[in-house]
Image (cartoon, rainbow, N blue to C red; front, side, top):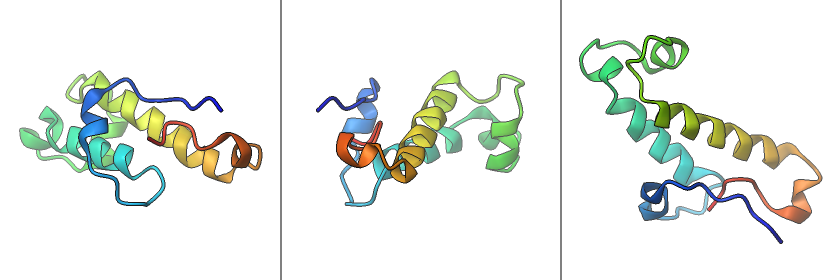
Amino acid sequence: MVTKEYADESVKLVEKTGRACDRLRIELKRCIKESECIQIDRRPAAECIKASDGSVPNRCFILLSGFADCKRSMVDMRSRFRGRKGDL
């Protein structure tokens, strides 16, 4: 069984809670909250994700992509045998 693992070491440090894709979700929230868009500009998180002005680090978009893949694999019937993508 081959699982897709996320290369960022900080995701592995987050404690498992038993929920699907939870470690990626927690790290994504932390990344967006620490971004310049939220800290300095005081914009909502949804608006920061949609903006492409460079105020959100590229790492956050990589985490977002990994989180979306993980959630999508929960619905995919083929992944029942392979395991969830990106879920550590």
